[in-house]
Image (tube, rainbow, N blue to C red):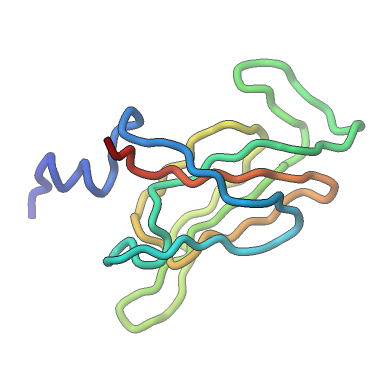
Length: 134
């Protein structure tokens, strides 16, 4: 099966067609994020990715200045959870992040949830990456 440009754009849009949508509140510790949508594969997490910023970082955490700035500690681990055809949950991808402001676009669209593990003492603000509608 060959992918068409339209299908590829729907499943993995270019960065210029995305916008950030704030997820209310601040986040610490462990948890899951969901954003229900109308149709598969976007009926569980109706977004293409996630971005974040650090609202609070403990003073002794080391920082290497650059573009982006890199913290010496892992600040955040994120994973996408999907379900296979039989309903079995699986981690389709995970990443450890040492910086903020990145746009993380999922390899496989429509996860059932996004799991987060945030470094002790760090407080995050999350934004969904959603399709920019005119």
